[in-house]
Length: 292
Figure 1 (cartoon, rainbow, N blue to C red):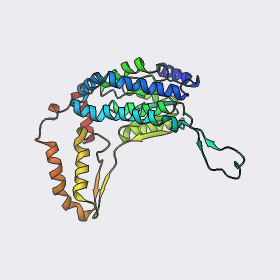
Figure 2: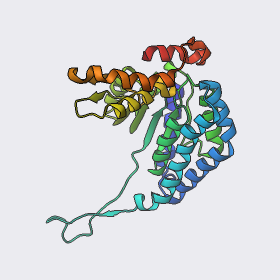
Figure 3: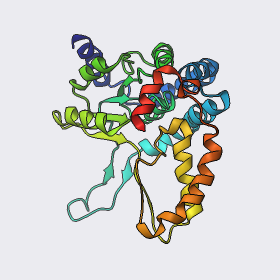
Figure 4: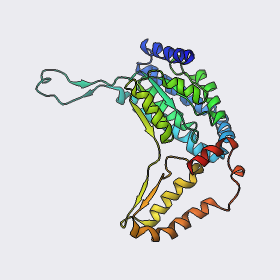
């Protein structure tokens, strides 16, 4: 408990110092993050491969490319995003100059996911840095190689006090959630999402949750399109990603006609039946089984 208090306390003290509020500082940190991704690309891809058995092409397209794109967009648009925005005047402000000034929230907690262990930490981190916040980063312990790499790399490129990384499993995350944050972002399943929400409610902390949603099909649905999109979510990333449907809810009159397009789309992705341990790292088998 004391360790987490110190980590969050240092981040809050660094935020209160005001050094992360200036536009120049935010852009400098984002450029440093971009340099990290480019300079350490091979190490990042190797860690993801060790954790998830992803090919270099898959890992680059799903984990690296999106982060670089987000960084480029954010650095380009941040001056206008951070600028005061004039608003329409009313009777109370007609004699004034009325603006909305974007303000950082404070200390943000980002809890990453095992299935996209790099991008689902980096993309929200980019937004939090751009908004002028301090950030406590908690990568998923299941993708342990990527988590350790993030913990090793971020202090080399970013401000150590403003953007600490906490590694570990359930005990460490549980301790973190007892601390007061100004926003929490969690990506994962609904069971843990409820725990995060319950912990945040004690401090009235706003929370952003990401998780899969059901997919619907009706008589007006284009069956092949529905089948393609549903199978893509099921087959990509071991079927554990936000594009996967937690439940399919076709209406009774269209259920039977969906079987053929659904089967024809899924079988080429699945291939022959093989033992799961030949496809997935042992540390992920339990997580995958829990999603079935």
